Image (cartoon, rainbow, N blue to C red; front, top):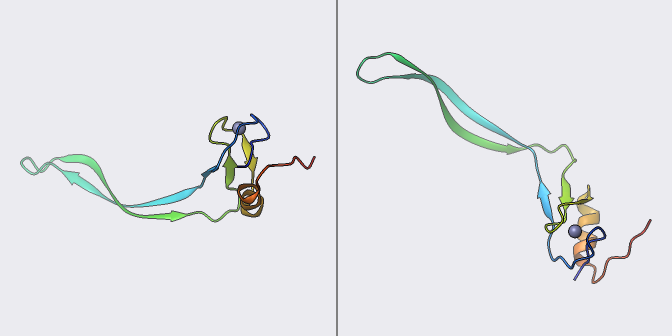
Length: 86
Ligand SMILES: [Zn+2]
């Protein structure tokens, strides 16, 4: 199993954080009885990922960011042991 270079524990997965854009249809919310405006009603319609290539791949145990590209993350997860390059 790969070993986290920060906490030296074996990990078999990484945690990635991705930015997303949430889309809502926003309408006026009215009270059905009094017809008074209650505020805005946010109706969620869509979730889109933002492809800005700055996803971070973190250790699930110590939460240290280890990689910023999918190639390195894949190589790390495929490796039996991790050898620190620098
Ligand atoms: Zn760690």
